[in-house]
Image (cartoon, rainbow, N blue to C red):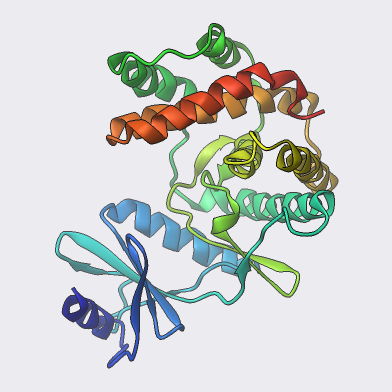
Length: 297
């Protein structure tokens, strides 16, 4: 594999790298200066590159992609598409370190700034206008039924009701769609943003719910961490609202979106053959449903 990676890097004008280190299943650190990443979906990769370059023009700090020697944004080899990015310097932001409410404010404001920029550029981008209610009925519910998974009574009904009543009236725009702190690099008080592969037009509150839900995983069973999470998420909502006011309907939608996100993940992990992870998602779904009334208090 390293010989192939060296050949791919040469296509970007990077010769004789002294260090190639795999950091994810599909990404490699190159000399602590670049990140080489692979994607099987050309359109997804092209969208991520295009969005990143538009956001740079909006002065939003995002990862910078490097063109090949012949001016292309990727190398096509072994039925995969390879892109090279300048490595962003900084660290992942841990909102549990320090004051959780203040950290939540920082995260909420960072997401609001990103949403402002995404809205500014959305008309320049051909992106899917996704309807979660269609995804729910077309593959999520069938996958769950196929595997004989049973959530608590009321879980699925609450999602059906949300999609039939509130969902379609919520504010929509281009969103990140995979908003968690691993896709945000923090340095000198500023965030840089990663991975716009999954960006789509959808309800903007989804990014907020996704960010909040991602901080709850592995923490909802710990009373101390759960208390900290409430402060973090309260801060996220307040920080976002200071820059982009949220409607009452959006705030009311957050708890059921939390539940939907974990149902989605349950189905996803069943689909890719990871039943143990799906079981963990199922348990979190049931806990979220039981605690919907207290999630944003």
